[in-house]
Amino acid sequence: MKYKDHFCGKPMLWSHYAWPVFSEMLTMHGFVYDVIGDEKDHGSPESHLWIYITKQKSKSSFAGQCNL
View (cartoon, rainbow, N blue to C red):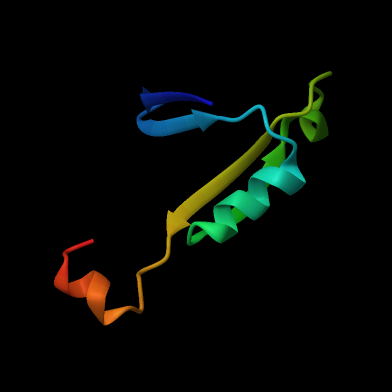
């Protein structure tokens, strides 16, 4: 994966994983996501998904005690 902390004003991560694998990894690690779009749908010859990712808050009382 490739990461930039400032890409058009926001943090950006590029993944080389296939979408089914990457989406499962996100879910397994407590992230939720919305697929914003695919560049291919806007005339690009390449397919690049744009997704918005947020981290779910932990429901564990232990995590709250550890400030995670």
